[in-house]
Amino acid sequence: PRPPPPPTSNHHHHHPLSVHSESNSKVVGFVLIGLGNALSFAPEYFFLRQVYFQCGRLRKPLGGKETVAASAPTTAEAAEPPKGSFGEAWVTWFRHSGGVPVVTVSYALLYFTALSPHGVVLLAFLAGQGVSPAMISLFTASGAAAGVVGVTVFEYAITCAGIRTASFIYVAGEAVAVVIAGFSFSAAVAAADAGGESMGSASMSTLSVFMLAVVVSRVGLYGFDVGVLELQQRQVDEKDRNAVGAVENSMTSAGTLLIMALSMDTTTPESFVHIVWASAVSVCFAAVLFGMYLRLWHEHEHSHPLGTEDSHAHTTQQRRMLVESTGSKHVHMHFAGPSLTVLFPFFGVAGEAAHSNDHGHDHSHDHDHGHSHDHGHSDSRRMSTAV
Image (cartoon, rainbow, N blue to C red; front, side, top):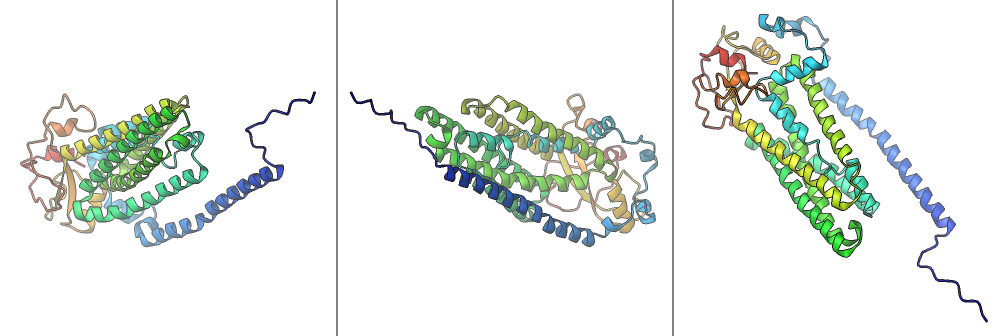
């Protein structure tokens, strides 16, 4: 009897030369990416050099006579202890007036997210679900391009709506985009379960909507990032910027670390969907918190007649402005919420809430339109707590 034929196999056997060629192409691609990364330092250096030579203050030596004279601390500020330790930085941030802690927390919440086109958590999950490397590369590149668009358009948004309103529009838009991404991802998971295949095979169309929503969310994120930076430059005293910046970096790093820790055991789409929705909720809460900041803290732009510069507290940069140009306009922040000190013992509003409504201003209208409020500041206690 003839021997039975060998069993057929559905597996494709790759020729050794094809495997070798594929390996070489990956190495070449890796080298080209590394070379491009190295070459990118040249334009980066060029732009930083341009900023350095265009900004005269960057070239002034620290501790110069002009700098000291313009930013000499008041008697009360000189009596404050130095803020050198990490714990003191948190205290400085915690007690900062003008709603700075609220803005910081709002910004830090955006880092508790896996919905990032360049985040290792999401990219590793997509690769594990069979999404092609070309699709992942397009996803990452589109996210970077969306960030450029967000920053570019934000300049025009400030002109039309003011920096505070424009920042809220951007973070609210990001929240809408990530909610759409959450629903799209849930639909993709359901389609993959129904087909019994990986997400990259069974639900690519729905997954593409998810990836597009994540890319669009980058427009809001990068614009909001610029807005928060500008607000902090206005409100945070120069002498406190290192402390506030250190706390902000700690919060953002903690958010990134936490999202990575939570995703360690999320190897299936059914478990990763919880990470997606947790990220969406965090972004939405950031938008709500920033909206509360806009409602509770209002800007007042005013100028000082000659000889009244010391009528209330000013930041270091405001004092420098007054020294350089007497009568120049600057902005103070006022807490415009209810006088409920029991409910506001945190976020720097305890002192502000006690005098929130007794400085002679009606806070029922929006103060983000830039007109001047030339008032007398009869309540020096209220102004002493403003930035």
